[in-house]
Length: 109
Image 1: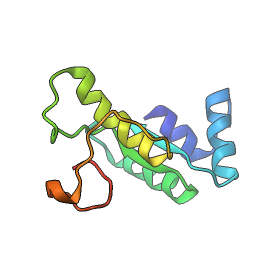
Image 2: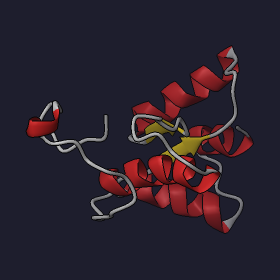
Image 3: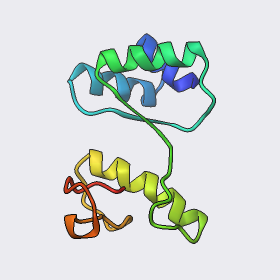
Image 4: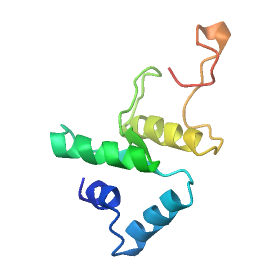
């Protein structure tokens, strides 16, 4: 949440923060994967500021539709979603098809 706060405030005092600042400045895709919960009001305000600046907020919320068998399987559901959003094809998570009862959008369900 500290990194989120510094990105939302536009602070660029190290390489990571400067990179995030440049990505937002250049209107490229910046995905912030947040793992801390619960959120307080300050966290939500910082998320809103980052969203307003062009970032995408993705809490690290795994899904359990595919009945993961290990911690690695659970982590893979989050990683697959992130890779999907940045356009990197992957086989980390099974995709449902219309024939399987999915919504036909190529998403995990």
